[in-house]
Image: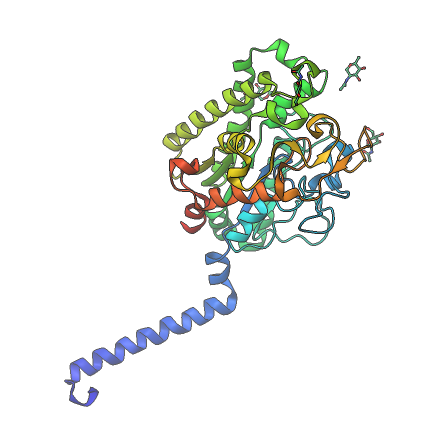
Length: 380
Ligand SMILES: *[C@@H]1O[C@H](CO)[C@@H](O)[C@H](O)[C@H]1NC(C)=O
Ligand SMILES: *[C@@H]1O[C@H](CO)[C@@H](O)[C@H](O)[C@H]1NC(C)=O
Ligand SMILES: *[C@@H]1O[C@H](CO)[C@@H](O)[C@H](O)[C@H]1NC(C)=O
Ligand SMILES: *[C@@H]1O[C@H](CO)[C@@H](O)[C@H](O)[C@H]1NC(C)=O
C-alpha cells in the first residue's frame, strides 16, 4: 500500500510516525518516573471525624477506654484482632477505600514511616466539631485540621507545589462529625444545652464545621463526602438514659440530630453556590438507620434495636469488651444479624450497606446526593 502512495502522503506518514514515536517515548519516560502513576491513580482519601470513621488514632492518645476499641471482641469478624475500630470489622471508609482501589487508609498517629500519597485518616472516637466536646480525651476537629496541614506540607515537600496541589484538589474528603457534640451533653454534666437554645447550639456546631470545610477548600480541596447524623436518641446507649422511657428512643437527642441535618443540608447547598468547583455527596444516614431499625429483616438483619455486644436492656450499657466502667457484657454469636455492634456503634454489615450506597447511589431512593462517591473519585 505504502508503495502506491504519493511522495507527499509518504512524507506525511513518516512525520506522523515520528510524532507517535516521540509521544511514545515521552509516555515511557513518564511511566518510568512514576509521574503518570501518581497523577492518574492516586485519588487520595482524607478522613475526618469521630468513632464512625476512626481506624485507630485513639490507640495512640492518652484517653480512656470509653474512647478506645483496641481490645477484644472489637475487630473479631474481619481483622481477627482489635485495630481500634468501633465495629466487629470494617468501617464505611474501609469499603470506600477498597472501591476506590486504594489500600486501607492508615490512622495519622500510627507510628512508622508514613506515606500520605493515598491519603490518611484523622478521625478520633468521641470527637466533635467543638473543642469542648469530650475535651482532653479526643482529637477534636480543629486539631485534626492542624494534622491535615502537616500532611499538606509533607506532600509539597515530596511532590512539589504543583503536584501536591493537584493531589489535594483531586482527593476526596470524607466527614462524619457532630454526633458527639449532641451526645456529650446527655453523657456528661455539661450544661451547654441550658446556656444555648437548641438552634443556637446547632449553629455553633455547623459554624465550626463550616470553618474546617472552607479551610480545606482554600488549600485546594474540592470533593467532599458527608454522612449525616443518625437518630441519636435511638442508639442503644441512649435508649437507657431515662429508665422511665423503658427502652424507647430519647427524643430530645434525636430532635437535635434532625435540626443539625437540616442545617447541614442547607450549608452544603450554599457552599456549592458560593465556592467555585466545590462538589459534594451526602448520605442520609438518618433515614437509612431508621429503616433498618424498624424493618431489620428487609435488609437482612434479625435485630434492629438491641446491640450485639454490651449488657442491660437493649445491651445499652457501654461495656463491650469488659474494659470500661461496667465489666460485665454479653456478646451475640452472629454480629451479621445485628444493626448495632455495641451500645453506640454499628456492625460491619451495616457499614458495608452504607458504603455501597455512598459509592453507587444515584437516586432519591438511595438517599445519596447530589453526587455519589464514585463520581467524585472518578472525576478530575
Ligand atoms: C494521661 O492522663 C492522665 C489522667 O488524666 C494523667 O495523669 C497523665 O499524666 C497523662 N499522661 C500523659 C503522658 O499525658
Ligand atoms: C456528674 O456530677 C455528679 C455530682 O457532681 C458526679 O457524681 C457524677 O460522676 C458526674 N458525672 C459525670 C459523667 O461526670
Ligand atoms: C466554634 O465553637 C466555639 C466553641 O467551641 C464557639 O465559641 C464559636 O463561636 C464557634 N464558631 C463558629 C464560627 O460558630
Ligand atoms: C417495657 O418494655 C418491655 C419490652 O421491651 C415490655 O414488655 C414492658 O411491658 C414495658 N413496660 C412498660 C411499663 O411499658
